[in-house]
Image 1 (tube, helix red, strand yellow):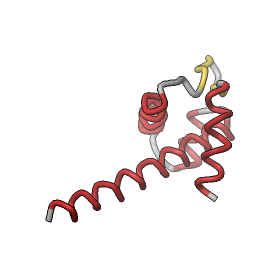
Image 2 (cartoon, rainbow, N blue to C red):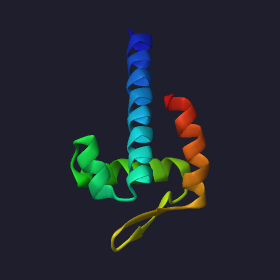
Image 3 (cartoon, rainbow, N blue to C red):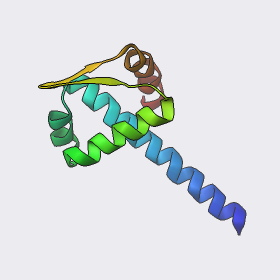
Amino acid sequence: RFSVLSHSFELYREAMNMRQLTHFLSVLEHGSLVAAAQQLNISQPALSKSISSLEAQFGHDLFVRLPRGVRPTAAARTLERHARRILQ
């Protein structure tokens, strides 16, 4: 029973990570949390939380928040290559 729950949790965690990578790439492509949230059909606060969680997991800021949009950091460019490979 524990192994079934453990397996289910791992599948959920993997799906969550894939969703976060999709969120990340959308923000990267749009250069804006608002535009990416609209394209993803989620709220901007939910998208911000997803990106913040991803940043915490990697231990690096992925975007510089600007008054009108975001700019990717070097860490974001590194993650981009991996994210595109994982999601293809």
